[in-house]
Every structure is written in structure tokens, then in C-alpha cells.
Image 1 (cartoon, rainbow, N blue to C red):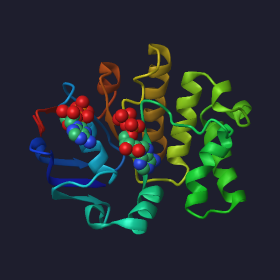
Image 2 (image 1 turned 120 degrees about the vertical axis):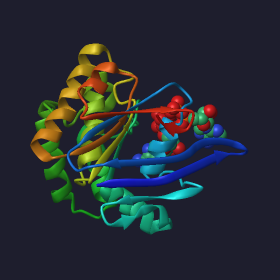
Image 3 (image 1 turned 180 degrees about the vertical axis):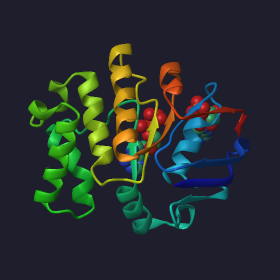
Length: 216
Ligand code: ADP
Ligand code: ADP
């Protein structure tokens, strides 16, 4: 599904990624763990084309995404990659369903199509009676599930998550992990997750450890 080859990245003369090779198969949940500063977030951003490597390539399905730029890249990313961050980044003025619809509108789906898919996801995530709530009216766990629905609305090939349960208590964190597992089991959804959470790492199919800019 995703293949990164010999990724190198420096900031100034500080070498952050020193030649990383990384592959994920369809339907696999891969966790990336390792000490703070190891380069995990930098790698995730490069895998998701939010950031460019200095050297190396990233291929998603048949597309060399590290070669795309501008509107073509933005549009490819919006339709093929779902992002989940530690803080949900929902827009406070918009309801749950409106937030979930945003990537679908950017992808020029009709309102009817976007809302149908958003409702389907919110219902699947137990949020049917929360669709018109603003983020501030939702619990932390509910906000994060809305963010995951938003990440899934365009049926992306892969979800990239950076500490998705980092801001949740252990009960909400564990139901979030269950949600990831059920999305894998039922829809063959693929995940790459940067996490400090041992339980999440244990429920993954594979754990990759980074240290000093390399996979060890
Ligand atoms: P991790 O996610 O493993 O904690 P990061 O990828 O966030 O590690 O960061 C690795 C190193 O890169 C850190 O030393 C961090 O300070 C540095 N870094 C990350 N982003 C930038 C940036 N935009 N400019 C300069 N240094 C950065
Ligand atoms: P972290 O929680 O790992 O610190 P952030 O949420 O701060 O990560 O986001 C890291 C970077 O990714 C920021 O530069 C942010 O602007 C960018 N970013 C976040 N979400 C998106 C998105 N959906 N599309 C493009 N860029 C995004």
C-alpha cells in the first residue's frame, strides 16, 4: 500500500532521518514507537506528503507521491490519505457532521453524497445523536471519533495518526484502539500510528521502533 525508500531529512545541519525504509501492506496496523526526538513525527509527515524528504521516495499504491506538488499533491492527499492528530483540530464553528463533510466538499462531492457518507460514519461510531453538536458540546473521546470520521470520509487508502490517543484517558484510548481494529477487520483499513501507548502498540499487527533517525 505504502512504500518509503531511503528517506533522508535534515533541518539545517541536523540530520533527522538518516535513510529510512518503510513498508505497509493493505489492512495492516503498524505502530511507530521510540524516544522523543527519534524522528517519528517527521517520518509520518513525509509518509503523508505534508513534508518533503531531502532524498528518497514515497509511493502510495501506484503513485510516486514524493514527486507530486501544488494542487495535484493537495488533491491527491485529500482523497487518498486520512490524518488524525493528538488534538482533533475540528473547526469550532461547525457541527460534527459539517466537520466530517469538509474533505468531501474539497474533493467536490455533492452535499447529498458527502452528508450520506458522513452520517454513515458517525452512525457506525455511535455518534448518531451527536451529528448536530458543535465540538465544544462533545467529550474528548467523541471529538476524536468525529476527527476519525473526517479522516475516513473520502475512503482514503491509508490513515496516518500521530499520538491519536495522547490526549484521552485510558478508557477512551482503549475504545479508540478498538475502533481502529474493527476498521481493519471490517474494511481492510490500513493504519500507520505514532504512539507512546503500549496497549495500542500491542494491538497493532507490527511495531516499528525508531531511534536517532533510523528504524532499529
Ligand atoms: P519524534 O516524533 O520522534 O518525537 P520529531 O520527528 O518530532 O521526533 O523530531 C525529530 C527532531 O527533529 C527533533 O529534534 C525536532 O526538534 C526536530 N524538528 C522537527 N521538526 C522540525 C522543524 N520544522 N525545524 C527544525 N527542527 C525540527
Ligand atoms: P503534531 O500533533 O504531531 O504536533 P500538528 O497537528 O501540529 O502535528 O500538525 C503538524 C503539521 O501538519 C502542521 O504543519 C499542520 O499545519 C499540518 N497539518 C495538519 N493537518 C493537516 C491536513 N489535514 N492537511 C495538511 N496539513 C496538515
